[in-house]
Image 1 (cartoon, rainbow, N blue to C red):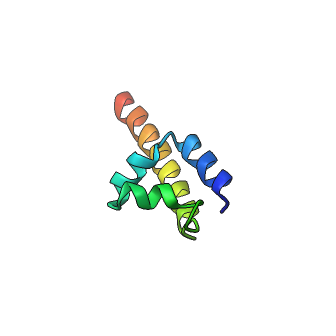
Image 2: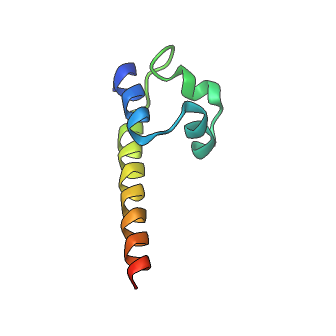
Amino acid sequence: MTKEEYNQKLKEVKLTKKELAHILGVAEQTVNNWGSTNKVPYWIDTWLQNYIDKKKFDNIKNIIKDEI
């Protein structure tokens, strides 16, 4: 994943690098360095996709819950 793809994916999921660092339990500087001085970890793309999927699932779950 390139730096541009990484930044675009973060925008898509509406996460800041600070929020991502907090969720992952890593230093904000580590997340900031991904794509610049360090490669973006291979797993971050699938992690972000799972994050997107979970948000969709939670939305569906809340819609169903409201209807019951």
